[in-house]
Amino acid sequence: MRKNKVDLLLAGTALALIVAVPTLAFGAPDRIESVVPLPPSLNGQAPRHREAAPVPPLARDAQPIAAAPQNSDSVDDNLKSKLDDARGTLDNVFAASDTQISDRLREIVTGKQMERRIDRAPERQAAETFYAARKYAPLWIEDGQLNARAKAVIAQLKNAAADGLDPADYPVPEFSASGSAEALADGDIKLTNSMLTYARHLAVGRVAPTRVLVEVDYGTQAPEPAEILRKVTNGGDAGAALESFNPPHDGFRTLKAKLAELRAPSASAQADNSIADGPVIKPGAKDPRVPELRARLRVGGNPADLVYDKALFNAIKNVQARADIKQTGLIDGKTLAVINGPKPGQQTERVTANMERWRWLPRDLGKTYVMVNIPDYTLKVVRGHDLVWRTKIVAGKPQTPTPLLSASMDTVLVNPSWYVPQSIIQNELLPHYASDPNIFDRMGLEVKKGPDGNINVVQPPGAANALGRIKFNFPNKFQVYLHDTPEKRLFAADKRAFSHGCMRVEDPTKFGEVMLHLAMNGPTPNSQQLFALFGKDERTFKLVNRPMVHLTYQTAYVDDGGKLVLRDDIYGFDARINAIMHSAERRIADVAPPQDPKRDLATAKSNQEILRRVERREANNPFSFFERLFR
Image: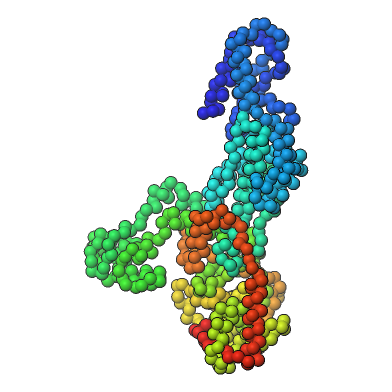
């Protein structure tokens, strides 16, 4: 609206000049190139830098007006007034020159006034250095107008929802065309700050991983702020440069595409196909929802029959069993919620939470890698972009969750010893220290000093070893592994969260064959040859080409058929991310909470002191409950 008013005023003034006084003369400037400038929000011309106060460019359909003597007596007062009004409008639109804005930027940066404009020190320091290197010329403004780079970045920030982020976190300043040099300088810095924050969130996530869980270690993926500034301002497409900070993985890209589908108007129109709530349906009762339930659960029967019969009863009990709810056979609200699945808004939250976790992962997953999806209870081996092999796993219980991490696999051990992790020693063994002094001998456990001087709890190789007959080692600070298990029956369950954090592999010898073939040079043993080594001495295979292992938590992913697959949030990580984003913690969500390494060191030291007494048999044994760990 403001643009239209300015256009009409200036167009009218130009017409009056051409029609009424074609030979009108007045003082400087020598030439008027245009009388219809575009406001900054709409100006699309290429940026130009000049030191003098800006002169608007020539409009395509406007003709130059000849200059006239400065002292002409033929200009009436009315026309002078109109010209003064026009000049005033131009002065408002182009209120500050590049030089004036640069001077103000120099004052802000050299006067140490950036701290209240950019909170994070690394980004503030990078911005200060960047502005200084360009002699404090504004980054987003040229001739008092937004340049093409600014418009591309603003478009990306306003479309942050497409990346699973919230545009409100990346405010775009109001660039008033009539703003002062100070206002435009402030706006330039604010847009720089929003752009740097957005790029960082694209790269590493909106929520710091350790705010969601303690046991997470994917390394540091955050781009340097100076690199962000260089990439966005290198002369190419600034919007594409920002987009490049998103994860490059197919798993992320397919979720982003699915997010757009979920938010499309067509999806909203088709979304509500859920079975309606209502009174509890008991077996033998009639209810108009029964035919719909039969269809949804693929139970045969007469579509017109409203009776809750035996076939539907069995199907309902199966649904309740898979959902870990009491198998009453009653069709109540909880059962209907399982059958209906998440609502569209809930699906969107699940997708964005998983997009967030994809940002935690390394950008380079490795040429060959193993990816564990904990809520899916699966493991896959990938080489390049090809799936090599897949199998089932058992993952950690909610009370002892499997950590999220990336590490390289260095060895495969046949007939391994089990070194009890410190977490089990601390949380489960030592609290029972005074119980059952004969448990060591009975369980074949040893408490002894290792090569590093620390006291270890070790279970020697054997058929009852907690790791089974084969272990896949990828050193990590949480002391978790992939391994065999004597409890093969656990793989028959649909939901397999049974372990103390390590992951048990359904077909470990085949897994060993695959990994040795991919990660070693020359001939390698197959699964039958590995099996033949069981029960003999411990055998270590050192991997030459170490594959990466990524332990991930994907409760939402897109399968090969393009379908969105949702899994149970067994550890509550989706709920935790969404809770952070809807609470006061959101304000500091991207800042990792402080850690206390001294406390962990103190705990480890205390553990060692107690275990030394156990080693010397100076105290009763803590392991009365030990036989329950791997039942």
